[in-house]
Amino acid sequence: MSLSTALWGYATLLVSTLAAAQEATPAAAPVAPVAQPAAAPTTPEAAPVPVAQPPVVQYQTPQGAPPPPQGYLYVQPNGVYEPPAAKAGDHLHDGFYLRLAIGFGYLSNTINLGASSGFDTELKVTGTTLAMEVLLGGAVIPGLILGAGIWADPLLSPKFEVGGASGSINDNQSVQLSRLGLFVDIYPDPKSGFHVQGNVGLAAFSITNKSTDETLANAKGLGLGGAVGYEWWVSQQWGAGVMARFTYSSLSADGESHRVIYPSILSSFTFN
Image (cartoon, rainbow, N blue to C red):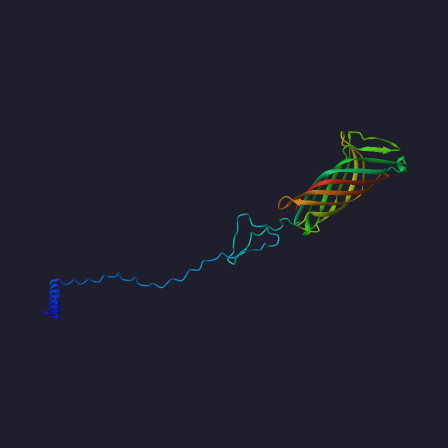
């Protein structure tokens, strides 16, 4: 047998063996496809909701109104703060007017006794005073006050000088300068406390016996006065302050002439 014949036989045998083995092997079962989950329906993306911004608050205080209470803010629909309306007359010098004042001063009354009295000489009465006044009135316009008042100024320890001699007036005798008249009080700024006052009226310088209430002397005449002061608001209507006052009176009685010069300093309390 030749080599080619042997190789051909061997090849034929190998092919037959492979074919028989393939027929004997069972076919593989087909693989079932894996079920994929159904895709969720696509929803259009919602548009973003705009966030409402608070309105810009513009604080506008009406003239004369107080500031808003701390921690409180009321916003009108248009975004403008509107505080509660101020009461008419708050921190404003208008309407009804009442002043009470008290203080101290120093009075000097030079008395010319005159020839008719038999004592053609001068007598001077001096002393520290308790200065008091009560004024009632009203505002013609804001800052301009007109009214009437009473001024009472008793001397605390009156002394006298005559012919080079001096002494104290009897403690049983009261000496007082009194006035009743009209006044004007002007506040250049009706909302501020600076004021200037002028007054005119009937004045009387009297000496009275305390035991018998007998009037020993009573000179009458014209009294002029002026004052300047400043007050600070202590409430919506009340003011308190200090006032410098000056009074001049020209009086007469039974041939006597009296010239009274009287400066004083007072604490004032005003409702207006």
